[in-house]
Amino acid sequence: GVIIGPEEIPYTGEVTIRPGYYYIKVDGPTNNIYSAYIAPDGVAPTNLGIGDSGYTSNPEQEVTIWAKTEDSLSGIDHVQINAWTNGSWTNYCASKEAVYNAATGRYEASFGLAEIPDTVSGATSNGEGTYSFDVYAYDKAGNRKILGSVTIYYDTTAPTSTLITNSTIYTKTNNVTITVNATDELSGMNNVNFMIWSETLGKEESIYSKIITSDTDTYTLSLDLSEKFAGTTGKFYVVPYISDKALNTSWGTQTTIYYDTTAPTGSMSIEANYENDEHKYVNSNTITISLTATDNISATSDIKMAILNEEEFSSITLDSEIEWLNYTETVEVQSSEGDGLKKFYIVFKDKVGNQSLYFTN
Image (cartoon, rainbow, N blue to C red):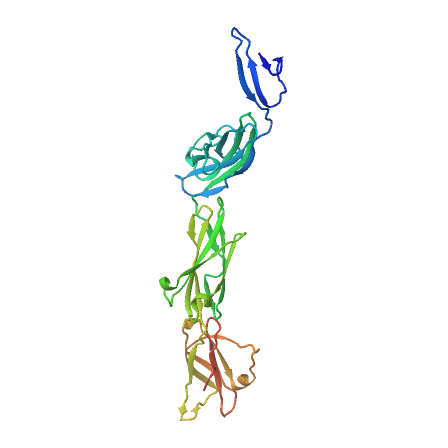
């Protein structure tokens, strides 16, 4: 055939022309002549954006992959999306032509994860893993543009966590730090939501939460008990609620906080051979003392005591090192040699370090 422009050009292969209307005569019995608009287009479509990668834990969920693209010369012919899993695409993929959505200005295609094949075996319904969607745009001149790739992480496994700080914390200040190490292998971590409540006020009445995010596997809660529980001491609970990006969740290890600002109370009594209203009398420098001690939070077994004679007590300062002993109800002490007035002083300390006044006898 020939292309008829200003003059007939015999067709011998590729012809360089300018955009415009042309008549094409086809040699044959009828010598038909056709009209066509011919516009040379060697430019691929323009990428105006594709959807973000995402996460899901629902095997029934369909994922919609979208792209925006345009072609100013010949126009968009179609957008094709190839879906696959396992490695890089080789033999098998689920391919769909995206449908243009005029309301959003996007080309869209929906896939069920179960229909996407393994690139090596061709098997479908592959379960947890990484699913890739490659997006291609074609214009009417046949030019192709790779618009990009979207990754969907299908993850049904809950994240794991380890409590780094102690599971039981005793404190006489309102500031507490709790650290959790949390990981998720497939979709990655989302956050740790620490649930906090007071036993004294009741769980339903006092529970609240603080969400902690992190760029590492370490999630640290800096807790000020006075922020929500001003004026309340006693036992508090903190439980981390761990979530990954696919919204799988798990509970971490509970931390119990004993917040105690009250010193222990107690008494002492010397076992005497004889006593009157003013003094007790003994006939040995080995003296037996009976003790009582209680604390509003610490168990009796957690109370410590220190026993000082008069000389030790008179020289004590804030910087003095005191020998702390486990609390017992009865203790024997040695007084100095010789007759005379002897004094002993007892002080108690609870688990968090609150100290009582000194008791003497």
